[in-house]
Amino acid sequence: MSQRVLVVDDDRTVADVVCRYLRHAGYRVDHVSDGPAALAAVAAAPPQLVVLDVMLPGLDGLEVCRRLRQRPDGIPIVMLTARGDEADRILGLQLGADDYLGKPFSPRELVLRVRSVLRRAGGEPASAVSEVLSDGGLVVETGPRVAGLHGRELSLTLREFDLLAHLMRHPARAFRRAELLEQVWGWRFGDQSTVTVHVRRLREKIEVDPADPRRIVTVWGVGYRYEPVDG
Image 1 (cartoon, rainbow, N blue to C red):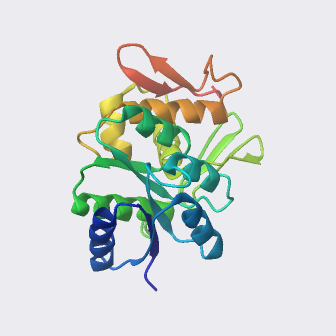
Image 2 (cartoon, rainbow, N blue to C red):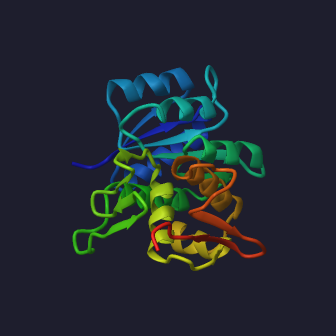
Image 3 (cartoon, rainbow, N blue to C red):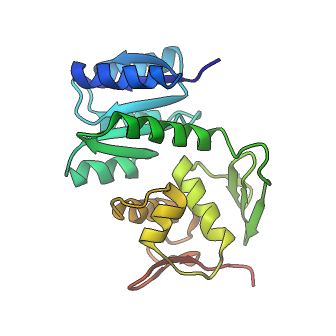
């Protein structure tokens, strides 16, 4: 059965185009036009992914994102933001959105982003080798896509998981933000603040003191590296 996507946008023209392209790509698509209706639709029948506009009547997209992130199922979220509205974009990422696009956007690019996020949400392809990455009580299993710290399961978004696994695969190596954007997100071009926001969120979840990180450290003038705790 095809995967189901919920599109939440009060702009009928944009919603019609997005729904048409997603259906053409093989997805089942539902559409609602305000925040309360989005929450009700997810509660009634959780989709595999939500395409969520920031500017919504009743309840804005940022609040909808925050409430969806309180659910245990971790439904992937792709946010749509106004072009150049950096504050909303960064806040959306901080609240746990897995990806974003700025308006106006290419519907084809949106389909590719949706496909990428859903692929990651479904785990690695069957042919891929499942890894277990472990360091100082932090364990990441790439097959089932689960992570834990000292026996407690971590609630990570798709991108947070992928970023953490990538850094742990290459301990003590410094990565530029542009490298991480390309190697983790698959974007050759994009806002590098996306990486900064995800690093900040990861630190809040895996560091004893996020303000004084010991695992994901900043390499000034370069970017970030993972510093092993063991050894």
